[in-house]
Image (cartoon, rainbow, N blue to C red; front, side):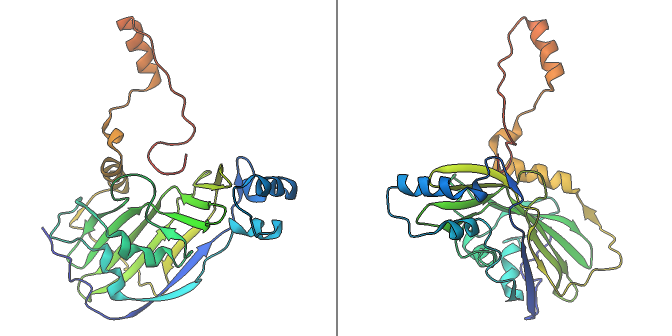
Length: 271
């Protein structure tokens, strides 16, 4: 067991840079709706909409509110375990203390993602006498314009915090949207779409990458992902059977297969 609660002992000023690329594509082109479709949606909305088509086109691609923001070391205490832990242990993060980081992207950030439970988890992935590597997965949502209920819901944010235990300093901290072909849900005027943002990331500027790290104990990133899935989604505990094996089982047991076709993935918030 290791106690990391007081490992960050400095009061350094830490600059964090924000990157937020425009939406590259969506299934229904909601983010680039024509002026005709926009005006039609305005007339069907229950309240008057004080927005032009040109303003609408900027709603889903606002860019970071603060491209560069400074934090203190104490702000990163939120990612540390609240008690002693072993490598591989998972703990909850305090949603309210995480929000200031996401509001560097947009003031409409919220940790209310529409389901019960805490959508922010962390895990001690690796430990050595000198370093500790903490990884985390966080689910959040951005209200881009409340009057037309415009929102952006990222699939997830993943990141890690690398700490020098001897100096009590942060070597590296990142928080980013997974780079895959569909990683955000968007919506407005009760219309929903799924799309791809190439890069949405927060990263410390003053990074000091160690030349080498000989971990005394460590688990893989894949093992951490599985732990997060089990902590966030009950169905992740199901042992899935490949379709080929399911067909063989159905034939052997003379029972039909009930098939459900899914668009997207089950184990994050973009589907």
